[in-house]
Structures are given as C-alpha cells and as structure tokens.
Length: 73
Image (cartoon, rainbow, N blue to C red):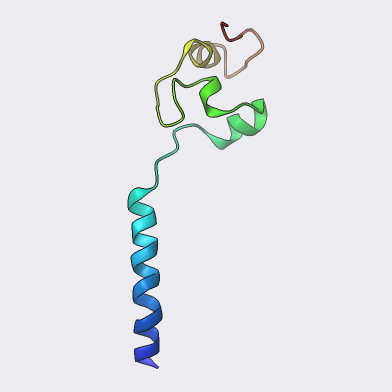
C-alpha cells in the first residue's frame, strides 16, 4: 500500500506545487467582475497588474460604480 501511495502521492504533490508556484495572482475582486460584467483590463492597465487605468481610478473614486465612468477611445 505504501509503494502505491508514494507512486501516486509524490507526482500529485509535485504537480500541485508547480501549479501554485507558477500561477499568477489575481488582484481584482470576483464580485466586481460579476457585478459589472467587464474583463480585468477594463479597469486595469493589464490583466496581471494592480495598476488602474482611468476607468479603474474613476470606479474606485465613485463608490465602485461604473455609472459615471467611461473608457476613452
């Protein structure tokens, strides 16, 4: 039983550890995405950045509402 456990457990632990180390962190809150139905880059400069663009700054300044915030094209 222990050899089978080692044959299965070790690869699973290695794969899960690798996924945890290489996955990117998400800075946005899922409730904002669900509420506004917008992608991350609508408010952030890139999907992997905490930095907000003009719409994101407006969203933060207006009590987390996009009502008065529109992207510049």
